[in-house]
Each structure stands twice: as structure tokens, then as C-alpha cells.
Image 1 (cartoon, rainbow, N blue to C red):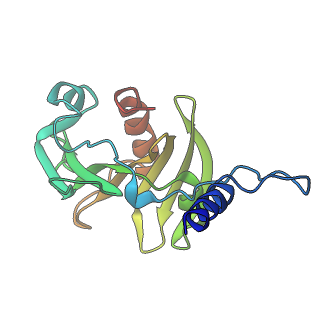
Image 2: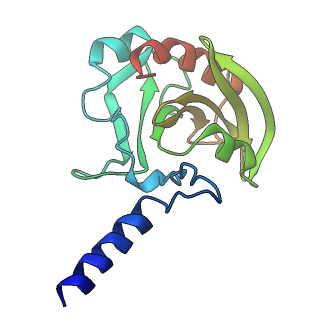
Image 3: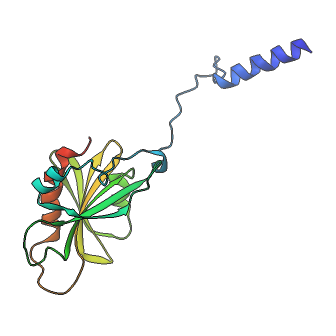
Length: 183
């Protein structure tokens, strides 16, 4: 019985090490990236300070949290703010910071994305896009070790004048916020 246990143990070790012999060498295995297991930067809970937000032209008092689970891993953490000042569109325009474990490649392949073009944000690879269902908003997505960050500028209402191009605004906010976001 003892020899059976030893033999089984040796076979188990051989299986775990890839049974290298004269036929070939077992190569390294590649891990599949699971976006739902990556801990992403949290822009909603003080990681972007009031000082930083004011510095880029956003009003910290107007924060709306779209998704920010209180504990655990999350593939998305999203919050938005209204611009500072007494602009006529301040209450109707929002700037969102989306922190995600999803990647630029995934954003590029998204079927609902339109007007997609490559760009950069302070040297980071980036993508500018709009959603087919929401042509009044624009996303600037840029690479990060966790996956990517997206800065979205959009309108909450169709009433009143819309001043400026949302893609230009999103690019400007992305460039201003990027130094405060992890690589």
C-alpha cells in the first residue's frame, strides 16, 4: 500500500510540473484577465479631493454617485459633478469619472460606440467615443494598469442652450484630471 501512495505522489508531482521529458518542455501558462477581480481606483470617496475637483472646474458639492459598492471588488466605480460657476448650463451638464477594470481594447470593440477615434491624454493611449443612444455625451477613455479611466461630459436636459463640444470638454477635463489618477 505504501508503494502505491509513493507512486501516486510522484505521478502527482510529475503532472504539476508539466512532465518535462525529451518530447518537449511545458511552456508558461497565461492567465485570463478577469475584470471583475481587479480592485479599481475609487474616485467617489475622497480620492479626488475637493481641491483637485475645484482646480479642474468641478463643484465638489454636486457629487452624484452612480456606482460605488461600499466594500469589495467592483469592475466599475462612477461619480459625476457639475461644473463650477454661474454658467447657464451648470445644472444641466455633468462631468463623470468612470474608473474600471475594463480596457481600451474592450471600449474600442463596444458595438454601441460611434465616432471612435484614437487619441492620447498626457501621453497615455486614449480613445474618444460617443454612445449611439446618447449623441449629446462624449467619453475620453485612457489606459491605466487597472484597465482604464473614462471621463464623460454629457447633458442632463435638452432644454436651454448647449454651449461647447462635449468631446472637446471631455478631453480637457481628462487632461486636467489625469495627473490625479493612478497609472
